[in-house]
Length: 208
Image (cartoon, rainbow, N blue to C red; front, side, top):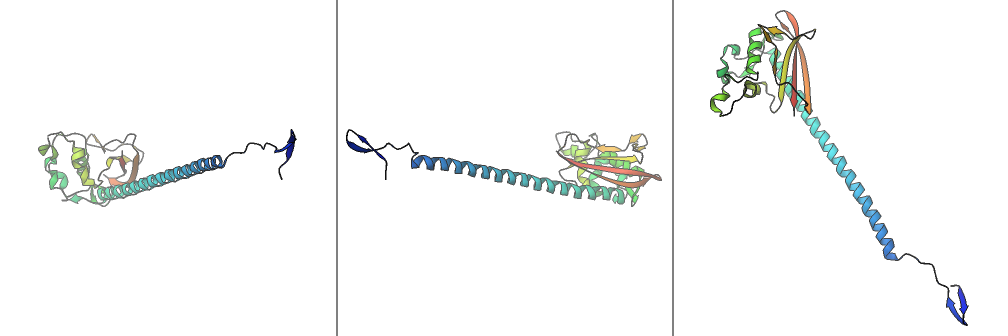
């Protein structure tokens, strides 16, 4: 029963304190619920985006590992096809089916190495791509498909075990593109023999 007071002989109810209306309460609850929903939704989106990116990166690295392994193993273990592909003029390199640097598994041939260095160089003097293209195409861009590395670029060097670059007839055994600030990069190393010396063949595959 509400408290009352007497004013000029008439019984009147005491004024009650101000209370927020039902609409105000519901409005506050709606804002809070909306904020929580947006926070959860944003968190899910960020988590999904991160997970998707990680999966994509893992797939790229897996593919790079596979193509790099296949490429370096073929180079150091096979002689290529035909066996004397190194004697074919660079302008007729399309007659070659596969490249290999070895006479026997892990025993490298100097002439094959020299020809490989040349046809994968950044010069553009006598590759077949320039016969049909209005633009100048480097030996590297024309011939890197022989490695089977697809969209990736590569850099290869051959060193002695002390890290010194092998030199054959005045030519340093390095070729390909030097990787810069690339997003994805993977390196494979294999030992082999060259002129009776143990050398290290290093193949770096990368992707911008």
